[in-house]
Each structure stands twice: as structure tokens, then as C-alpha cells.
Length: 475
Image (cartoon, rainbow, N blue to C red; front, side, top):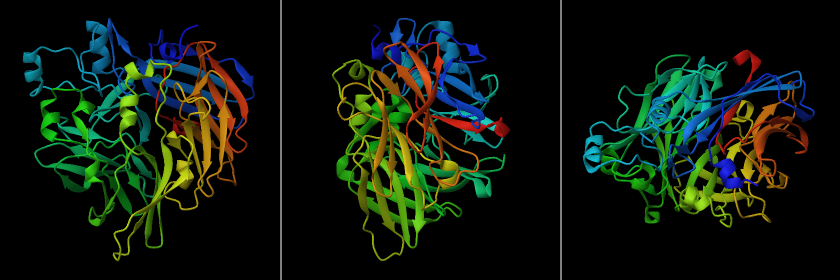
């Protein structure tokens, strides 16, 4: 039997388009639209292998729902990194933790012409009427949601050298605005908050100077504020500008720095408050909101940055390894100016990663309760993420879905039409079935957390990251 590692961290054999997938159980008839997912399509180029889960060449997956039926297509993201790998038969562009084999002269030359990947493999977003494949790199790739073909690129700033972005922009639907943070690396670096309204150009709202920038995968946003959380995994910007090592290996864990948190007014760019708390690390802010004179944010937190080392392929291929747990924390920041004390509590001891909630209705909303995430079964700690968890933030209670030899990805919540309860809907997750050597799309009742149906994919889908659901009217 092919190992879980080979199935989840190998290579996709083909690009296909199927009008209908075999369905077990029942897909709700009201579920109409498309789930678009992003992630690596291969960890191999010729005789070379990428080094980390966050490397690899991007592949898009599309699941289209109509009247209980599910269509499917997958396609490598057409970008320079993919084309160069295909033509040369080797890794050509620098990735998160993988650099091409280069001579000393080539490394020196890369200072002036760095070839940072445009393989935007991490997440999906619709910005105005444009569908984007997103990554932490400065170039985002626009694609056609019908054909999955690339149609252009997008960037926040005119030049791409010396900058990175977060892969989780925030949406203010009431004001038709999108926000994201760009880290600009220089002798004096800056975190820059950008806003786009409608289909307009990005406009800088404000910036925060920093000497040693933090690795930042996401940020928080409430009704009035952007929350910049500087985990003490930091870099000397000169090292990134020289780019003599893979991107993430230039960063160092410095827990003595603690974790500074800057609160910026997202309309004016003014700094509203600054705080500092104990050292911790996170990829994903979940939600944030204001209650009275208090700013509250939920985040999936780790005590240190060891999770990054756990995602190296040489570590993951050991079947006895155990991935560190991320847990859901709630931080409280006083905005009354009378205190600088940050308090926090753990909302759930369950392992969480790739968290989701009903973003459309409950983003920045203090009454939100439910978080859905990939997880690890406490009695099956060895290996990769193998269950889905739903946490009630109001009391910490949790529901789980687990099936032997199955490895589910990020659960995307889709609300039922006319719903009156926050969790009335379904959670969609692409699941690797190691026993069969293939994957399936799982449809869970989000309230009971029981399986409603599954659509069987004829091949294994590699372990990916993020996606989103778009109603029929959005496409």
C-alpha cells in the first residue's frame, strides 16, 4: 500500500475535468456554487524534491455543485515558476524553504535579480470581480474560475523586490473594501496596510517602521482596527535582500523580544495603541471584534515556532513523528488608555490548524461562536492532520469527525439559505483516503457534524492549504 506521505506529499499524475463525480450519501440540493481550493500539485521536479510542505508548485482544484451533483477539475497554476520547472526539468525559482542549486556566482547575481517564486499556492480570494491565487510573495496570480487558466497578475506595489504579503486579506463587505498587509524589507523596514475599494487600485492607509520584521502569515481586523501581531520569529532584512538562504531560513526565533502588538486605525492609519505580551507564534488570526473599550481577537497559537520545522518533508516522512498542537486562544486588549495589560485564555485544548468560521456573516461580529479546523485525534497523534474539529468559543465544547486512514484538509463552512442559526449549513473538506489511495470531498452537516455525503475523486489530492466557496452568482 502506498504510504500516506507518498500520497499527500508526492506529485499529481494528471490534470482532469469531470462532469460528475460518483456520490455516496446525499449532497444537499441547496448547495449551489463552486468550491475553489489551492495547494501544491507536486513536490517533485525532475530528480529534485522540494524540502517543505509550504514549497511545491501550485495546483487549483474546482468542485462545482448543482442539484446534488458535483463536477470536478484540477489544473496546475500557470506561472513562471511552473513553466520554468516544466521546461528545464529542475527547480528554478526560490520557494519558502527551497532554493535552486546555484553556483557562488549565481548566488551573488541573485542579489540584483532574485528569482522569487510566483507559484501562488496558498489561498484563494475574489477581489472585486477578479479571482486570485494568493501567496506570501508579492505577485498574486489572477485566474479564470471557469477554466482555471491564468489571465494576469496583481501586486500591491509597483516593484516586487524586497517585499512579502500576508495570504489572508480581510474584507469589509459593508464598505466594499479589501485590506492586506505588505512587509517592505529595507534598512528600515515597514509593515504597510493597504486598502482597495471596489475594483480600484491599492491605497496605502498607514505604515509601521520596524528594524527586524516578523514572519507574518495573517493579521487581525476588527470594526475599526488592523491588528499587527509581531511574533518573535524575526529577520535581519539585509539577509533577505541578499537571499543567500531559502526565505524562512533567514528568520530566527528570539523569544526574549516577546510579542509586540500594534493596533492601527484602519481608516486613518493612525496608531491607536501598542501592547506587548509573552512570546508565541501563529499562522492564523481567526476573528476580531470590539466590545466596549476592549479589542478582542482569536488566534491559533503555538508556544514557539517549532511547527515550521515540523513541516519539513524530511520530518513528515517519519511515520512516528507528532505534529505540535496549535490551540485556540482569545486575546483581550484594553483600548481605554488606562492599561497596557494584555490578557488571554485558551478557548479549546483541541489541536486546530487551517481555521475557518462563517466569515461572510460573522467577521468582526462579537456574537460569533463556531470555529472549524483541521485537527489531530488525541489517540492517533502520529502522522498528519487526521480529523476535523468544531469548537464553540462560547464554552469550549467541541465536536469532531474522524475516520480511520483518512486525512481531512481545511473545512470550509457554507451557510444554508435562509439560515437562522450560525452553524446551519455544511462544512466541506477534501479528504485523503490512505487505504484507497484516492481522495474525496466530504460534506458534513455543520450542526450535527455527521457525514451527509461524499464525492469520490479518482486520484489522491496532495495535502493543501486554503480555499473558498463562491455562490453561483459570483462566477
